[in-house]
Length: 111
Image 1 (cartoon, one colour):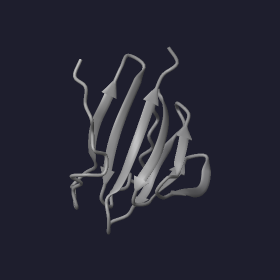
Image 2 (spheres, helix red, strand yellow):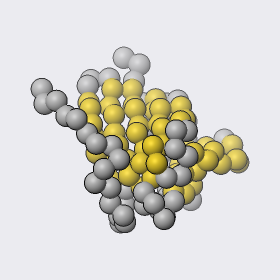
Image 3 (spheres, one colour):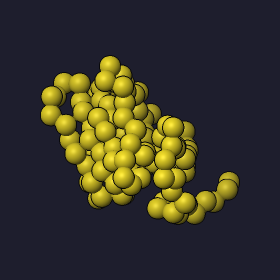
Image 4 (cartoon, helix red, strand yellow):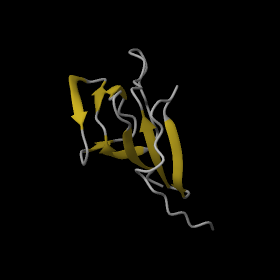
Protein backbone atom coordinates (compact mmCIF):
# COMPACT_ATOMS: atom_id res chain seq x y z
CA UNK A 1 0.00 0.00 0.00
CA UNK A 2 1.23 3.50 -0.85
CA UNK A 3 0.83 6.02 1.93
CA UNK A 4 0.05 9.48 0.60
CA UNK A 5 0.26 12.76 2.46
CA UNK A 6 -1.67 15.20 0.28
CA UNK A 7 -1.42 18.95 0.71
CA UNK A 8 -5.05 19.80 0.13
CA UNK A 9 -4.65 23.55 -0.32
CA UNK A 10 -1.36 23.67 -2.22
CA UNK A 11 -0.57 23.49 -5.94
CA UNK A 12 -4.05 24.68 -6.88
CA UNK A 13 -4.78 25.55 -10.51
CA UNK A 14 -6.12 29.05 -11.17
CA UNK A 15 -8.24 28.01 -14.14
CA UNK A 16 -9.44 24.71 -15.53
CA UNK A 17 -11.56 23.56 -18.46
CA UNK A 18 -13.23 21.11 -16.07
CA UNK A 19 -12.94 20.28 -12.42
CA UNK A 20 -9.74 18.64 -11.19
CA UNK A 21 -10.47 15.48 -9.21
CA UNK A 22 -7.72 13.78 -7.22
CA UNK A 23 -8.56 10.45 -5.62
CA UNK A 24 -6.89 10.41 -2.20
CA UNK A 25 -8.13 7.08 -0.86
CA UNK A 26 -10.11 4.11 -2.14
CA UNK A 27 -11.23 1.02 -0.27
CA UNK A 28 -13.98 -1.42 -1.27
CA UNK A 29 -16.62 0.76 0.46
CA UNK A 30 -15.05 4.24 0.80
CA UNK A 31 -13.60 6.80 -1.60
CA UNK A 32 -12.14 10.21 -0.69
CA UNK A 33 -11.52 12.87 -3.34
CA UNK A 34 -10.14 16.38 -3.47
CA UNK A 35 -12.10 18.33 -6.07
CA UNK A 36 -10.90 21.71 -7.33
CA UNK A 37 -13.38 23.95 -9.17
CA UNK A 38 -12.59 27.27 -10.83
CA UNK A 39 -16.01 28.58 -11.82
CA UNK A 40 -17.46 25.27 -13.00
CA UNK A 41 -21.11 24.37 -12.58
CA UNK A 42 -23.31 21.47 -13.63
CA UNK A 43 -25.41 21.90 -16.74
CA UNK A 44 -28.90 23.16 -15.85
CA UNK A 45 -30.47 19.90 -17.06
CA UNK A 46 -27.90 17.58 -15.43
CA UNK A 47 -28.45 15.92 -12.04
CA UNK A 48 -26.00 13.70 -10.17
CA UNK A 49 -27.76 10.50 -9.08
CA UNK A 50 -25.10 8.53 -7.22
CA UNK A 51 -25.42 5.04 -5.80
CA UNK A 52 -23.15 6.12 -2.91
CA UNK A 53 -23.71 8.47 0.02
CA UNK A 54 -21.60 11.63 -0.12
CA UNK A 55 -20.39 13.98 2.58
CA UNK A 56 -18.59 17.02 1.24
CA UNK A 57 -16.87 19.96 2.91
CA UNK A 58 -15.65 23.14 1.23
CA UNK A 59 -12.11 23.95 2.33
CA UNK A 60 -11.72 27.19 0.33
CA UNK A 61 -13.76 29.22 -2.13
CA UNK A 62 -17.56 29.15 -2.35
CA UNK A 63 -20.18 27.05 -4.10
CA UNK A 64 -23.91 26.49 -4.30
CA UNK A 65 -25.63 23.12 -4.45
CA UNK A 66 -29.13 22.61 -5.78
CA UNK A 67 -31.31 19.58 -5.05
CA UNK A 68 -33.91 18.46 -7.58
CA UNK A 69 -36.70 18.35 -4.99
CA UNK A 70 -35.90 21.80 -3.51
CA UNK A 71 -35.92 25.16 -5.29
CA UNK A 72 -33.55 26.78 -2.78
CA UNK A 73 -29.80 26.67 -3.35
CA UNK A 74 -27.50 25.73 -0.47
CA UNK A 75 -24.49 28.04 -0.36
CA UNK A 76 -21.27 26.60 1.03
CA UNK A 77 -18.12 28.43 2.10
CA UNK A 78 -14.96 27.42 3.96
CA UNK A 79 -15.84 24.94 6.68
CA UNK A 80 -19.40 24.32 5.44
CA UNK A 81 -20.39 20.70 4.80
CA UNK A 82 -23.30 18.84 3.23
CA UNK A 83 -24.50 15.26 3.50
CA UNK A 84 -26.05 13.96 0.28
CA UNK A 85 -27.77 10.57 0.70
CA UNK A 86 -27.45 8.05 -2.12
CA UNK A 87 -29.79 8.72 -5.07
CA UNK A 88 -30.52 12.30 -3.97
CA UNK A 89 -30.49 14.17 -7.26
CA UNK A 90 -28.31 17.27 -7.02
CA UNK A 91 -26.05 19.52 -9.04
CA UNK A 92 -23.49 22.28 -8.55
CA UNK A 93 -25.26 25.58 -9.28
CA UNK A 94 -22.00 27.59 -9.29
CA UNK A 95 -18.49 27.87 -7.88
CA UNK A 96 -16.40 31.00 -7.46
CA UNK A 97 -14.37 32.16 -10.43
CA UNK A 98 -12.03 34.52 -8.56
CA UNK A 99 -10.45 31.78 -6.44
CA UNK A 100 -10.38 27.98 -6.56
CA UNK A 101 -13.10 26.16 -4.67
CA UNK A 102 -11.56 23.14 -2.95
CA UNK A 103 -13.92 20.37 -1.89
CA UNK A 104 -13.09 17.30 0.16
CA UNK A 105 -15.63 14.61 -0.72
CA UNK A 106 -16.21 11.31 1.10
CA UNK A 107 -18.24 8.65 -0.72
CA UNK A 108 -19.38 5.37 0.82
CA UNK A 109 -21.84 2.59 0.29
CA UNK A 110 -23.76 0.43 2.72
CA UNK A 111 -22.16 -2.91 2.09
